[in-house]
Length: 143
Picture (cartoon, rainbow, N blue to C red):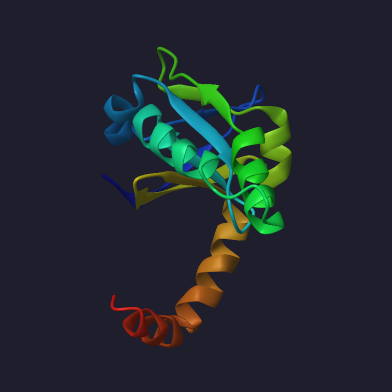
């Protein structure tokens, strides 16, 4: 289970240090892809395989399901942790998420999200401000 919030820096080659507590979960390989809200999603191979099967099973006749599958699947890239605990983030994904030097790694149970530090800060401010409304909406869904 991935939880917590961590700050790391991208190096000049686009490598990102993975928080130590997550390395063992990702040592068998991982997949990074375009996420939502201008971030990247990082999955274990197992979680990615489960998600990819569900995405592949969506009805292709619906434009929104095709678009979402394309966003997630076409943008995906296998990554491996090197001997220093880093993953190399492809340039096209760094550009998509607007990742500069400082990156926030946020654990969200079955995935990690990789955020530009400024975008994460702005996102958190809005979300924290709206937390009462969000909680109310979730309670209507049974959460």
